[in-house]
Length: 285
Picture (cartoon, one colour):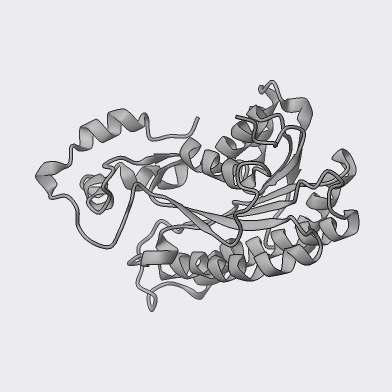
């Protein structure tokens, strides 16, 4: 099935993380050209991309999404290199591992979480829209696409991670507002969000290794399994596709095994060892 993504230019923030790396691979498979941003582990990203067959179709940029000028420079560099930027995936984010009640969490932790996850997404999309306004819509009618990476924490909340949940919940307001704004500069442009649940990435690996955590996070899922980074990346590619998702905007696609707010499974019905085997090693590729 043709996704219509071939030769499109895709900006991916947080490209050095587990989901970011999967996003790069999935979009590269579709023949896209890539603008990959990272702040942490940029050297690892460079080394990884150097070994990929699509390395000549990628521009790498070390920048902080919390700095509006820095992310504007990344988008500008991508547009100057490839002629324009067609898809924006605001993936960069942080999840403080320590479980702390709101009154126990430091002001610095709360500020960093909100600045990275919420303001970082705002600055990223703002820079993308500004560049889109300068370049104009594509002549072939393939509208631009923005996909934000949210979290089920933004829907259900997360004990001990109020800062994270609030930062991800704020993205919904961004999606619902930007879908009405972006069409003022590109009549076919779309804005959506992918909302992952527990996903096996380096950020979550240490938590998932703890005894009982798999039971705790899968007991409300009809599908008793954990997401892989590829599951999230392919959902993003679908929403970015100008052919498969051309009439979808302002929506949230949850990739969380049907997670909901009630218990589905008791401890003796969840086989942690099977889930571990099926998911693979709890580490990024």
